[in-house]
Length: 235
Image (cartoon, rainbow, N blue to C red; front, side, top):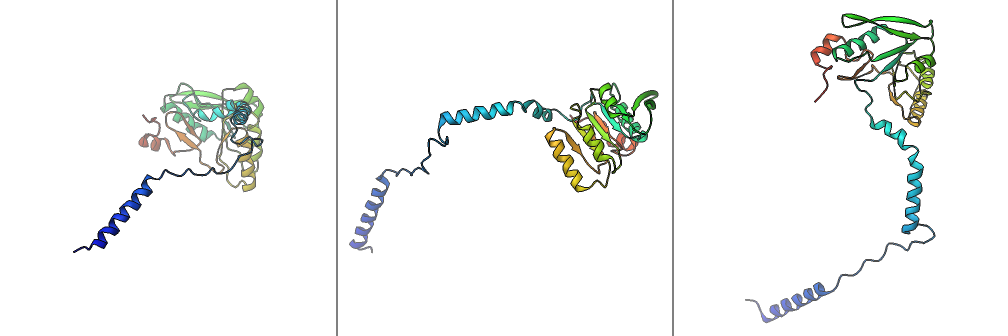
């Protein structure tokens, strides 16, 4: 049996709780006062700073939009540095089974010989690809090429890559060479970032995008590519 004292305590507790509920919520204090001179919290000053920030970044907007484009398409053209005829033929075989209209290799650069034409197979036919002694000549005569596949050795891979980045048309560089010092690689990555150039490598076997482009000897022999259906683009 509950006593009268227990009923009184219960009534007092319910009244105390009700009074707490009826009290209005206390307003939280402001975090800190902001000086009007600092510009923080000042809407006009904020708009002014935001406008200047947008104006300063407008110049780099066009260059940053380059990364919004896909690196490789069915129209991508590449310039190959080095006399790597086997790798180039592998790229052309991939292009042919992908039903590209033209070979992906626009030209080759090999500074140890004169300008000439190199013969390759295109399906059951033949094509001739220009080989230039100077990279400058290759870039000027093939302005649509935006990929550089660099087969230079570790002794000249750094210099040839830096030279390629001097041409704004180049958007992607694949560096095949192994053994490039880490410090040199860091310098290449920093320079490439400043020029919005994508670097694949160093010490890479290349890359492949089904239906578009194959870099170097990626994917192995052609029968393996056909069996794996790597030439068919995804849907």
